[in-house]
Image (cartoon, rainbow, N blue to C red; front, top):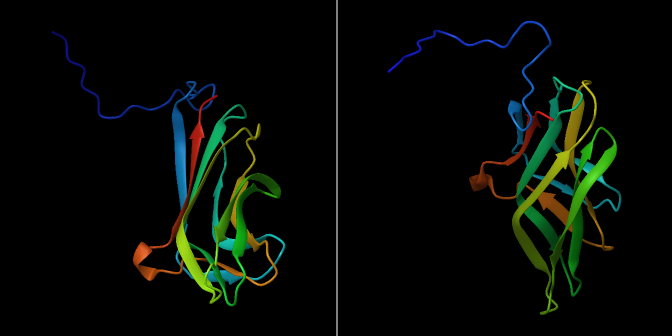
Length: 163
């Protein structure tokens, strides 16, 4: 039986970073735990953001955003509707809707976790900025994130994966 003992393994110094297809090259995480709300009907930043500089132009970036305590508030007999989206720089990548229905004509508050995931192919080694944005879709809702301090806040995780 053979044994191999090493103190440290380093990537080769020529040819750049090791780029095995499917290998995780780096992981970056951003977090945000301040309660935010919007009544805008256009997308605005939630405060949740992270940036990554890919080592290889053929890498993919797996983006995973978890918005805690996300949802809507409305009074009266209307329904609450809003959207969340992930953007890279200024390009929209993926979105989802949050909805709450008021069947009792007394208003409503509805919060849960919004999870968005996207496998991005940016084809660059320039720094990329990913953000979570939100907006309302109806005429009178307030859309929120981080409404429960017990959740620990929202996170966005970026994983560079070799292409």
